[in-house]
Image (cartoon, rainbow, N blue to C red; front, side, top):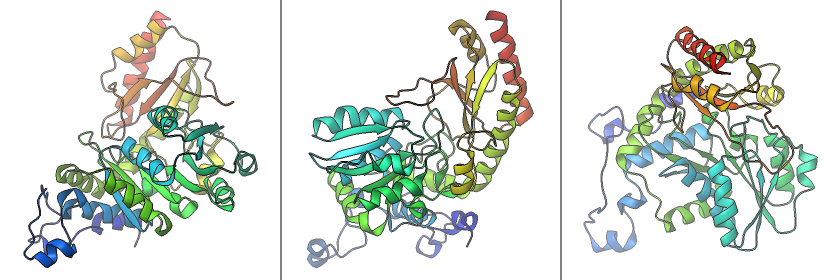
Length: 383
């Protein structure tokens, strides 16, 4: 089956749930056992709500099939998924290699929490090649964490090349795949051992639930599930149901997000106020060749570097949009625009002017362009 069909049919069992199209919401903590044998032998399919319900396992099955993995676990947020994946493969005394362009809260977790646990983190340039990456591996290096495209600056990494170099030295490979989702990129097929997603974004798709997913190859299922269970990571039936509901329409929504984002990105490229548009789907983007090789589509999130402008001018531009809201997420049906601060310690892209991040929602593209044009009028009036 094509992925678009899997999105509709995976993780469902109508016969087991009175014919309901989607698995209904199960809210459960205590699960009753009928016999001592079942209680002590853990022989039931469900033994305690923290360990899963039909709602959570239905969504896990859908994501796992889409990712091409051996097992998926849900977490309360995308950040929880990133951090749990790291903790599942690292121990005190280990060394982690991490792309310099990762999601800032993941970076903070490494710099503060992992450091407290005796785990060292080194950052490498997001555009490094496999040979350069291999040279950074130490005797105590145990894992590499990639995010492609990079958070805020959208560098595309050579996942297969880095994964091959990592595996040659026995490292675990983790990829944050939130931007593309497992519909547009399959990290496990490209060589990763674990793929994580902030399902809050495109999988939920409606800006109304927090959710994360971790999917592992067979070799990494045991450490992933051990950590997940011991840390009590759990998701309510309500959140899992919202993820399940969003998943069914994700292919249609992502196609529209991509179509609109491309139109907006090209429009931005023609504006005199813009220095650069950061979007791998654009043919002149530095990561375009890798994107074409490893991805089957692009999402609605991209960056825009403005030519030098005052803070007041940028505020006038953003504060008065009619259709673009300001908020620290993306992936929902709504369009968003925020200022972006990048946290980097390695050589790489540094914007000369203000850097903005846009999410193209599901509104009419021409209406969005009109809103953006009015914003530039306000910027120019102040700048």
